[in-house]
Each structure stands twice: as C-alpha cells, then as structure tokens.
Amino acid sequence: MEEYIVSARKYRPMSFDAVVGQAALTTTLKNAVKSGKLAHAYLFCGPRGVGKTTCARIFAKAINCQSPTAEGEACNACESCQSFNEQRSYNIFELDAASNNSVEHIKTLMEQTRIPPQVGRYKVFIIDEVHMLSTAAFNAFLKTLEEPPSHVIFILATTEKHKILPTILSRCQIYDFERMTVRNTVDHLKQVATKEGIQFEEEALAVIAEKADGGMRDALSIFDQAASFCQGNITYAKVIEDLNVLDTEYYFKIVDDSLQNKVADVMVLLNDVLGKGFDGGLLVGGLAKHVRNVLMAKDAQTLPLLEVSEQTRERYQAQAQKCPTPFLYQALKLTSQCDINYRQSSNKRLLVELTLIEIAQLTQPDEGAGSGRRPRRLKSLFKQLIQQPKPQTAASQVAAAPAVVSTPRREEPVSPAISQPAPAAPKTAKPIVKLASFGTSWSQLRKASVSPKMTILPGTTPGDDRKTAEHREFTQQELELQWMSMCNRMPQKLVGIATRMKNMNPAIKAFPHIEVTVSNELIEKEMANIQGSIVNTLRLYLHNSDITLSIVVAEMKGQERILTRREQFEEMVRANPSVEKLRALFDLELA
Image (cartoon, rainbow, N blue to C red; front, side):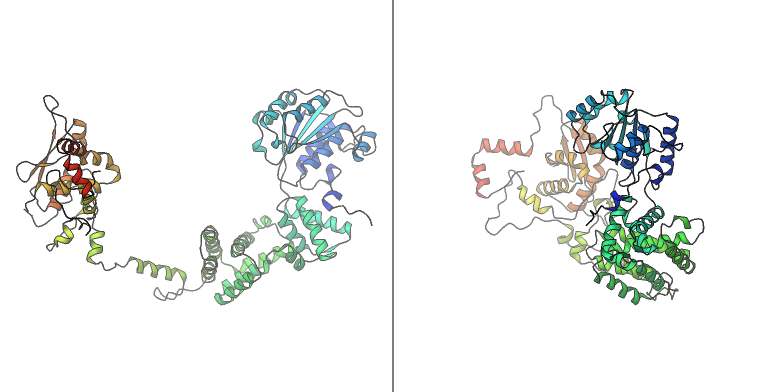
C-alpha cells in the first residue's frame, strides 16, 4: 500500500504563486529576488498555519536559484533547486529555536556562518519559533545579526512578535502574515478535494474553514479527519457530527420563533440542544454571532463581512428582511449580557432560558403596564416590590438606628431599654463586683458597646433637631462608660484619635460641664474638629441636653505626666498588691 501523507505536507506550496492568502507578501519577496535587493535578515510573523515557514523555504530556494524565472520564482531545474527539493542542500539550514534556545546552540550556528556556500550565492539560516530563544541567546545573536558575512541571510519566523527583543526587531525586515479568510480556505480545500477525488458540499467545507480559525494547516488537518469519517463524501450533516459543531439551523429557527413570540418552541429547541450534549454558553455565543451576521446582511455594504458560503449568505439575507433592526440590537445586547454572566451563574440553564424568553418577547406588543407578560413589565414590577418599605420591629429599629450624624426626631419618650445602652449581665458563674477605685472592667465596656452604631463626622450637630430637652443627672462612672463606648463606636477613619481618647479621663467639673485634659496642642486640634459631635453624643446617651465640653492642654512645667489607664492600674498594683489578686480572682480584663 502506498505510504499515506497528510494533506498539510502533501499539498505544501512549492512556489510563491501556490501560497494562499498572502498575495502582498509573496509579491514583495518575488520583486526582491528579481531585483537582487536582498536584506541580510527577515522576520516572518503571524498566526499559526498561515505559511511563514513555507514562504521562508520558497524564498531561500529562490535566492539560491542559478536561473530564476522572470517573475522571481525558482526554476526547479538547476542543481541548487534540485538539492533543496531532495532535502540534501548544504546552503539552507533550519533551526528550531523551541528546542535549541541556549547560548551554545547560537554559538554553533555562528561558527557555521563563516563557511561560504559551495553551490549558489547565499547560505540561508531559517530559525523557526525564534521568540523561544533565551535572553542570553538573543544577546549572543545580536552582533552577527547586525553585520553578518556577505554570503549569509537570516530568516526568522515567529507567532509571538511581542516576545522578541526590540534590538532584534530593528535589525530585520518585518513581514506580517494575515489570517486565512474563510473564502480562501474553502477555495483551497476545493482544490485539494478535487485532486484527491473526494466529493464535498460547500457548506461542509465552510464549517471546516470556520473551525480552523484562520489557519490553513489546521484546515487541512480537519479536512483529512472529515474525509476519513465521511468515506470520500464530505457532507454538512456528517461534518457537524464529526466535529461536534452545533447546527446553524438551530439559530435560524430560534430567530424565526422569536419573531413570532413562540416561547414554548424556543424552550423545546433549547432542551433538544442541551440533550445532545452541547453547553448552554455555546448556544448563546453562537446565537450572538448569528444575530450579528443577520445584522450585517441587512445592508449591502456590510454583506462582504460575512465569512460564510454563498448558500448560507442567501439565507442570512432572507432572514434579515424579516427582522426589525431594533430587535437585532436588543437581541445582541441580551446575548452579550448572558455571555458575561454565564460563568458566574449558579443555575446556568435558567440564565439561558430567561435570556431566550426575553429575546422571544422582544417583538410582543405592549399589553398595559400591569399585565406583566413582557420581561420589562416584570422587571418594573419586581423593582416596585423591592422598594416597598418593610415593617420594622423595635429591635430592628435599634439595630438600624441612624448614626449620630442624623438622629431621628423623637415624637414620644423612648424606652430606656432602647435609648440607654446598659452593660450586659455578667455570667452566673462570676459574682457582680463594682470596683469604684479603678472604674469598670474592659469586658463590661465591650459588652455595653452593643448600643446603636454611631458615626462621628466633623462639623455635624445631630442633636439639634430634638424637640424635648432632658436634664437627667449622671455620675462620673456613667460618664466614663459612655465615653469609652463612644470611642469604641467611632469610624475607621477616626481610629487614631479614638485610640488617644480611650486613654483620656473626662471629668465633671461644674455639673453638667465636662473637662478633658490632653497632652499637647496637636491632639487638642484634632478633638476640636469633632468636639460638636462628641458633645451631641454625650447629650444623647447621658440624657442631658445641657452638657458642655472643654478641652484643656496639660501644662508640662511643674506637673506630673498624665498616666494612661493601664499605668494608673499598675500604680495601684504597686501600692496594693491585693488589687491584682482581686483582678485575677474575678477574671477582669484591662485592654
């Protein structure tokens, strides 16, 4: 049996004219061969399977041809051309930079450049996947690439030009290869199928071309696969079955049913697609592409943008005549939103179903704002339901009480259990002990801070709108408790001044006037910015609207340093060690 050769190798172009889809580049290279104006380094870059290495080989054979044609092609008759065709040429070297990317490989290549060619005029070095070279190898290659011997030409090929050093790019003539269009790919596959004696349907070849995504090598590989599956008769039905491609008939039917508002038919069709093993996201993506093609088919100027077969193009034009332009715009918007949310959705099928329902109801006439049949009506109805106020219990009102910045008006006296934060009851295992000598424990302060949240902002006066004035008396212990609770509730942006305020000792001077001593003027300035908020907070939680506050800077001359609460406690322990035993006995904390 004759040895089988895949189509990508069997039908690899041997001349510039046989290269598909790169007419501008091949013309430039042929003109360079005819005129003899050759650069010392070329860079061929572009997607995979578009002919970079093939053009490099054809170009290398042409510049060494002893009698090139008038069009700049190789004659394929001289000794140089025959040796190249028989793969025994010593003037053309190919290096795979993916596996030979070290400095040693480049140095070995540089040594070969010193030897002049035996047959022909040039030694051509084709380096494929040149972006895989290491940085050290690139640097070792720089000098030779800039000033090679007169008989040396370098042809570099890469799929990722952005990974190549700028110093390399500046030394090369750069040729950018284009992706293969569907039309060019289909035409080439027709030629290959004709030569192989394979029957085909043009729609089937168009599916292969779309699957190849602009690569001719991929298209030929898929063609061989389809030819093997179809046993010499490539049909559309067998190709989509072999390649597991969703039939475009589904998209045409979805659009037709949506125009007639047949939601049930669309749901049945979706279930059929999912039952065949296709992903819902694939259906949405394909539908978006289909709607885009229908939109392009509405105008004769955009019709060439459709990379499909002639028969499919006619179907797009026929459906475009039935689709209103606003419908297509809205359908594109809905499919794009679904595609964005698909990966994050926990119920992907429901998301696809809702999207298709909305598309199927885009052309449905309005039936009143209260009918709720169209998705937009349902959306507005849900919005109204969400915005309806919910009944609040007393506990929820306390939890959601506004900050000190916006204290609500109190039309009726508020229960002390709500307005006055009280320390939580201690555990039954521990006795209740009041240590008046050094204040309340930090645990009690934390438990007492479960009162409504407070936000202190400079310049706010939250208590100004209160209608009833209060004159309740309070003790020094209550003042310290509310002062610490206020510091614990201060927002994150005031955490610095809150930490300093925890170490301060507010004192009742002439009731209800409160005085607090600070260590320096900087702290005094920071507290002055929020003094109004502090006063209003104390008035609110101490139930006394006559409270005033003064901030005094301590005089350092002749006065002792102001001790923090921890330092005060340590002084007490040194004076009376039994205080520490008492703290340990009742498991009291001092933060």
